[in-house]
Length: 108
Image (cartoon, rainbow, N blue to C red; front, side, top):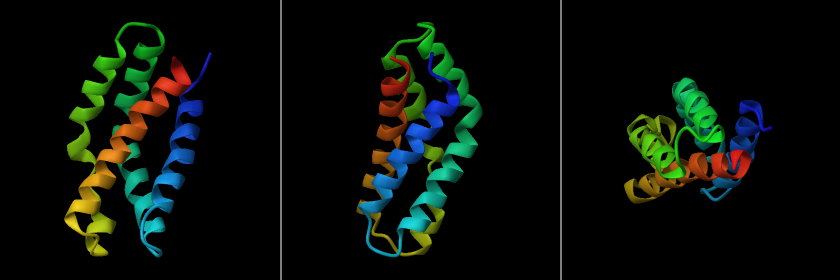
């Protein structure tokens, strides 16, 4: 059975790929912002992924819960670095998708 550490490893791998798609020089800022979001959300993600793995919640429930955390995905360093608002929002949406897709890949 998959563990929460497996999930975090999957997230880190995906985060590196996601950050690589940004303009040179912003990858470190992107990883820092993503890690800050994951740290703020870790307790909830641990609970929700356990519930998902045990069939207590559906994939749609998990998606809804994570979407509710989107506001916590504040990209302070990327905003300070001057990333355009549209790119910043797309990056935030991609991060939320990564969190959801990684759970499905690891636990289901």
